[in-house]
Image (cartoon, rainbow, N blue to C red; front, top):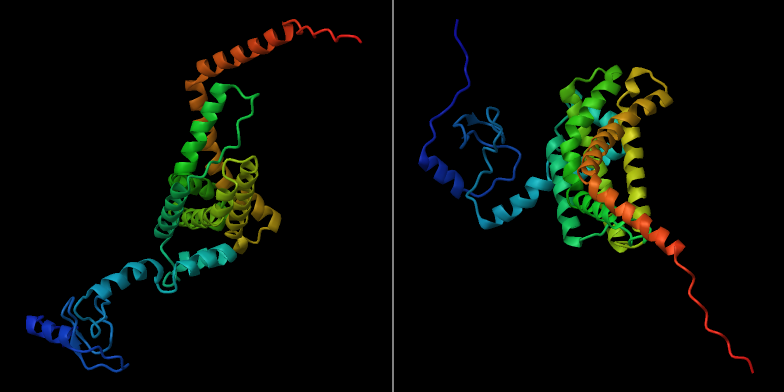
Length: 310
């Protein structure tokens, strides 16, 4: 019995030099050549052993480097916009197909999330958007300062906070999407994709937030963006159960909780901790403001000057 094996050759520096110096062959038919990466003899364009282009590998130039920077970000097969658009418009079928193995044309979920989040964080920090409206005089100073510091933290790190919350969101998704048969690793993929699109929605509204920065309308803009994000997340997580036979109402109810609980529960806990640490300061400021109001009420009314009669 004769064993068969893939033929390979030892890479010769002269061979590499000749390949680098040869002009690019744009035809579809290639003569056998040695792969410069693993030395396997390749008859087609791409090496079947390591996947490298065996015939169009030329010496690097500055033009290649400038081309590779955007190419490595945007041209992952069909590109980042292809992934975002399909997850935005068809989240259930797109993510289920990705989990089933159709991954060639999509950005990896964690890379997509980090890229979108990084772009949002960079633009947001450059615009210096103020997410707080002008101070209401009725709000005590200590409470106002606490709100201001927390809002500034959220504005600066909100997108990265969502990244940090992905494992928690995935845990809730594992609980509420268990009818879909997803394990925790698959729920991490689901949460990363959906969170990336939610951050993309926030990124899309940055010009509107910048226009109303620090005004009385900025709260309404923030509420609108949050409503759109939560609404999309509810529909997206619910669509992951489309193959289970559940009714639309049942899918939406189960889709509501992963993103909402994964985002709100940690935020509430952090808010409670911050309020507890500053409880004495806030209590003292509130009591002082109440005392000032009582003194203002008990103070005698100012005497009016007598109007001279003619």
